[in-house]
Amino acid sequence: MFADWYRYNPRLQEKDYFDWQFRDPPTRLSRADYDFLILRDAAGRIAGCLGMVGFEFRHDGRIAVGGWTHNWQAEAKGEGGFALLSRFLQLVDNRFMLRINENSADVFRLLRIPILPAIPRWWGVLDADRAAVLFKVENAADRAVLVRSAAMLRGNDAAPVGRHVSRFEPGDEFLLDRWPGVRGHARRTGTYLNWRYVDIPRHDYRLLRTETGLAVYRVETIMGSDAGAIRILEWTFDAPQSAGALAAILGATAAHDPVLVDVQCTHPPIGQALERLGFMPQGSTQTPVPDLFRPTNYSGGYAAAIDLPPHRTQKTMDFNGWYITTGESDIDRVKL
Image 1 (tube, rainbow, N blue to C red):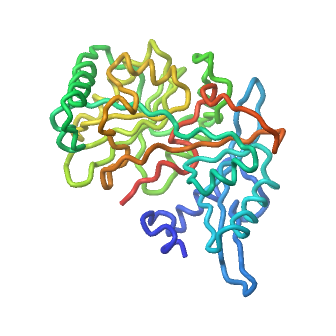
Image 2 (cartoon, rainbow, N blue to C red):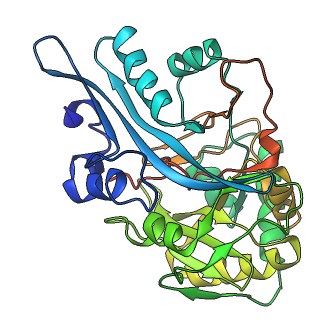
């Protein structure tokens, strides 16, 4: 059924990947073998599923357990899908959802769950001419934005900072206290980061760290070319370290001929610090710069929702006060 439901994502058809995702996270949400719900019809046939991944998070000085939803699928729309979600809501009191579609968003609105329409994205180009060809940017004003981005990134003469490591120490924890506006974030402990980025089957993430900051990134080949896109999944370096950390990443990836580097994060000051180095906010060009590269396309951005107690009450959520990236949940999976 996964081969049908997720035919463009073969990772989910591989048992070691499924084990990693739903059995092996450091924080579990149930006592079952897997944090994975299965819906069956009256005949006992599988008719839907909903995966869950637990994690610890910090929010306003406290540590709590939350859960991401994954792979919410129901063949019979309506009651079946809501039955799965209801079971998740029973198991998890602090609920986090990413990459939600309009059908999901309608349900969340009925439950009065705050939604962020799209996680902010920033991108920079390293070769303006090649980026214009690959991304079909023809507008003169848009090309000028690409040229400006490339000139600023090439003009970064900061000495590289940090060191690349193969794993983090289990006792490590990277806090966001150097960004005083961050009120909530998943705990970036060594144990969590190793599970998410090192132990994941058939992915190749690179880890850059200092004593106080980290970046996690990978290089993706743009389909139909030999050029690369640098996808930054984690970025907790403070503003003074950003130039040197970026220099370290660009130096380490030069052999992959990258034409673009991007990051998506809900805390705007992080992206704004990168803007001073040549990153541009999504929307800076009339022609959208793609965020998907196999094949090249612009997704429109990834929506997020957070449901903290009290539930089913009208409330607002300051998403700017959270550090949520595309490294969370299951957004970043390598496509074949």
